[in-house]
Image (tube, rainbow, N blue to C red; front, side, top):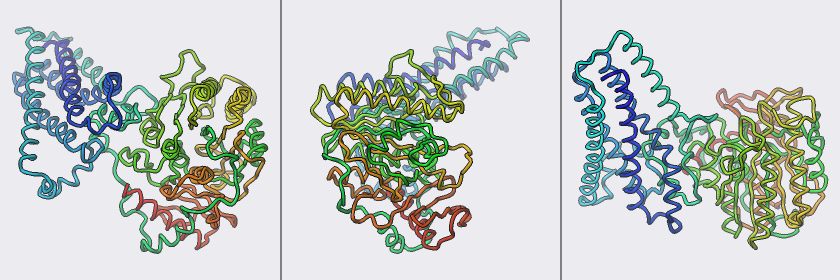
Length: 617
């Protein structure tokens, strides 16, 4: 091979791998498992499956092309005669592995309803147990399907190698002296390209949610390459089973039943009707420190403060975690953040979590999530859909030319778009709507297109607040405001040093409910958690919330132990009316606040129950 030919040969192999998954794997999965779809499948759906799933196919093709690229580079420099044999052996191994993975994924999906992942290895520890529930005929059919599928890959790969090698090899053409560094440089560039395809060009590395686009999980799973899901799942270890066990299950349940009641009757009404339109604004990094109404020393949010004065303000709300991935799950699933991991990474568990949007959708709401950034970051695509949002609107769906930052489109144009969306919905539909709007401008590097404050951080909050004020003005002018519940809450506090930076002030975030559907003004000073939003809202709407095990209706008669919990890396805080306690979960030691046995016991029981519940989902 020449210095150039091995690159072209590798490119041909890469294209074959992408084509094989498109021509063999996807039709095989879709034809066999189409009965798992929750709605009729259209040609438009199939086109979307290929468009979104092609990314994961390209990633796996990049993994599979790495060895052929290396063999070709070595053969180019050494005139090695065994490259064809090496490729034949490689193709045989990869064919059997790819065929087995694709066949198993297709066969198991009807039973599991999720893509094959590392959990399959648990069953393979006992081959007898793994095959006990299937007939001999079923097993024989599966083996035949595996071998046939493997044969299609092997024959196609061999043909690709033969054609590209035959077309691109020039006998008796020895490399000149400069050919060796050319091969090395070409190889390094090619490896870099493969790495970029695998990682992606976004801020965060690729993950399986890049393929998620539909409210029907089956369509998302059809798009997702099974090999990619398997490789990704191998890097995500289940960190829940048996964690934080310090007491019997009965003792832990006894403690948490008082902390987290799932039933109760509201003692007063926040809403003046039970089916308003609902807009939930999840504000990036908004600490109470930046709101004058909530006692902050750096007031930057006059519009939010005005809403707090005219609506219902929860003055002692504690953020569940310290990152957006934790905050989204806390608000929309009523699920506490974990100190050792983040459940949003475990995509198979997400449909089993409770979902506020799902509960509202079941009650007749049309549900939409809007974000000016990339929803593939931190599995937000997957989570929003799993939690019940039927439509997703992200940066890629918005007009070009809008004000942007490194995270996406700034909050002002996104809020304008959101106002138009709810106004359009109200004009076209009689069904109530639920819109989740996640902001992004008040995030490092805090560069926004409007200067109102000297300090960059304060200015970024003032910018988003200004956009919020414009949003409210549009909703009031349109009349939508009259039957709207607007909920504004932070995803977490600001992760930067501040003058007063103990854990309780760090985790203190604003929570406001406003709009024409609210009985305000009202101030609620009880300690609550960010996780309590879901149960409180559903309780006010006379909808069940018993499946939200860690979310409490703070207006109910059963809310007798007011408190807020906050998790951070290897630590957890519990705050109540008497103070707060912070425990280092690695050292099992109080590091801040009061070393109160009651709170320590509540933290221990909460962790044990939380991780036990997550291990079951």
